[in-house]
Image (tube, rainbow, N blue to C red; front, side, top):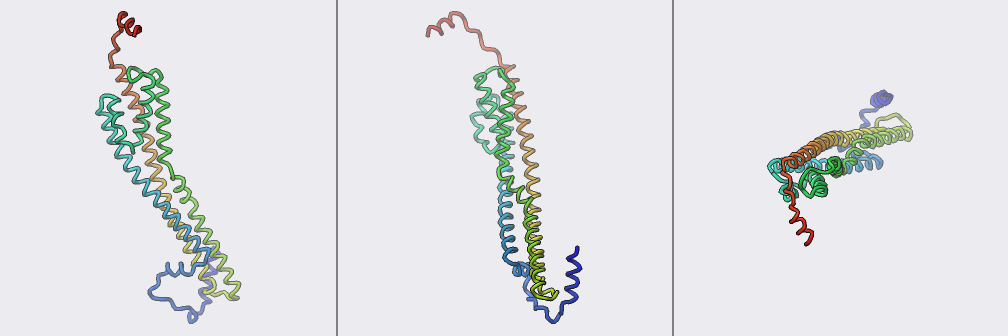
Length: 260
C-alpha cells in the first residue's frame, strides 16, 4: 500500500519534457520484458519452462485418460457379453490402456490359482484384496507426474513474487544511486515487478485448473475400478453356483487312474 503514494509522487515530480520517447510500434509487454534485469529475466525463463512442462503434462494426461475411458467402455461391453472368463481373458490385452484390464487379470489369476477355473472360490477375501491391489497399482501408474503439476501450481506464484521483490529492491536502489526521486530511476524495477508477478499467475492458474480436473478424472477411474471389481466377483460367484457339480468318479475308474 505504501508503494502507490510513492509512485504518485514520482509521477508528479517527473518532468514531461525529460521523458524518453516511446516507440509507437512497441507494446507495453515487450517494453517491460526489455527493461527486465538479469534476475527478472532468469525468473521469466524459469516460469516459461515450468509453463511448457505443465502444459505437456496436462495434454498427455488428457490424451491418455480419454483413451483409457474409451477402452474401459469397450471392455465393459465385452465383459457383459462374454459367457466365460477364459474367453474374456483371451482378448483382454486388446483393451490394455483401460485400467479395468489389470483388475480383471489380477482377479482371474487369483481365481484360477484357487479353483483352476471351476466352482466357488475358496477364499473370497483374497479375491477382494487382489482387486484392491490391482486398482491401487493402476491408479498409481495413472497418477505419474501429477505431483509435478501440483508443485508448479503451488510454487509459480512464489517464483513470480521473488521477481517482484527483486524488482522493488532494484527500484529503491535506483532511487539511491540517482539521488532524485524520478520515475526514470524506478521504472525498470517496477516493470520487473509487474511482469514477473503476472507471469507467475499465468503459469499457476492453468496448472491449478488442470490438476483439479485430472484429479477428478482419477477419482472417476477409481470408482469404476471398484465397481467393476465387485461386478466381476458377483459374476464369478453366480457362475459357480449355476455350474453343475462334476460327476462323481466310479471306484473302478478311480482305481484305474491310480494304476496309471
